[in-house]
Image (cartoon, rainbow, N blue to C red; front, side, top):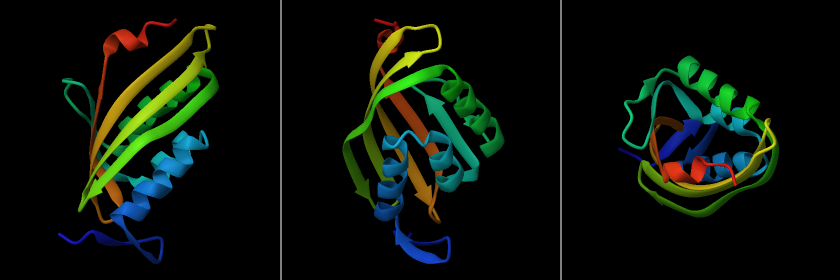
Length: 133
């Protein structure tokens, strides 16, 4: 499988797509990143949970998360590795939720890309990190 893909009328490599997605997320544009770079049949899972399949279903989950955030203090990719159609992103996310709780979490996203879109993503994180500090 080729790492070069046609996206939005330009030729982008998987690495360029990942870098663009990271840039959007680091700007707090979570839903814009999702809309631009996730495929219609994307399967997304957290830790050992069964995946949620479908763009609409996963967007609803993303909307729920974004709606629970009152303020983002930090959204940063600590490291990014891309190899062919696979990407691994180490994320740092620090936010205050709508109940006033400050949450800092670090997670790793393992992604499979196809034709400029994420087709599978699994997040790995310490569930204890979700306890607000």
